[in-house]
Length: 388
Image (cartoon, rainbow, N blue to C red; front, side):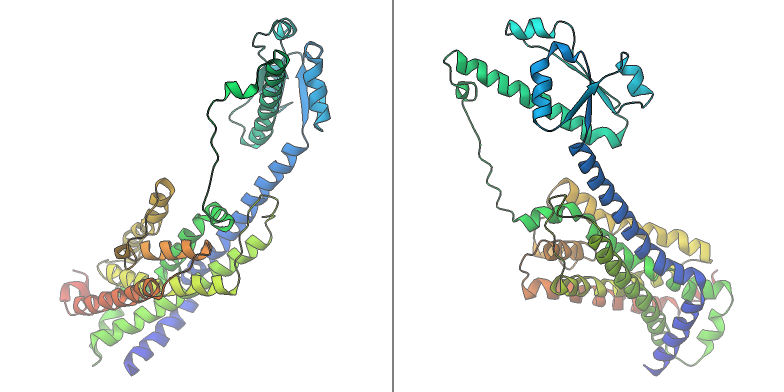
């Protein structure tokens, strides 16, 4: 262990001196919180803009009752441009509501009176306002339809013979957590990104600098050397996880969650659960990266190999976005997958049994130690040491 500690301190100092290693541990945790803050504040801004829209209408005189209904709902109506499509295409208006000349005749005779909502579907920033106007028109149409049935002595319920009452057993917090289903992926990715350059520099980098051979000449067990390199990469990986979580907490504190109808609480208990679930994964990620980088003959070649590992933490997120992953016990010991399940439960405020925690927490360090043992045996091969 003394030799492993010496190697650990040496690799840790080298990593702190290496600009690439420090940037890889810092850039990712700082970049995503900024992106989250911008994205959710933009969503909140669009919601506010949709509540305070001005509806440009062409042919308002053909539907005075509908225009009056819009205004009584608190929306301002303005005179629309003569050429609605050109105005929307030139971005003079986000949308234009066009009421045709035959609207009043069709409306008076009880036929379906169509209106046109002209908008540019490629402009995402106008989607909320367009959706709000579409809902207003449909709501007005339903109201008029019900009044027509009542005036003829017909109950509006005859047109809706079967109703459905939604009974969602998920808590408000669990539903809100679905908004942030990407948080587990971000935290898990931080474990693979934070220590990657340290793992590469300690193996392929040393071979490229021709400093690996003198290191292995020393009368020190290969296992101790690999153990020190593994621990140094794990420290950078764990630090990246801590920074990513801290950045996410700061970002969420600057997002108007209540305005978006999101009830998500991340307190000390949740933070402890997130760290407990993720930090052990840093040991597996670093061990796997050290082992794979050992096969590379150069720093760039190792970067190519390890960049493929970035797909690993994304797989559970993509699967969960299409269907439920379930809660089978055998998924918990699988690195990245088990962490994703546990992090999702923590964010959803669900109670987690000790057995599930132990399966997730213990499997990653054990697999990391297995990678260390395999790497130590690889260092006994001349082909690996000399890169031939």
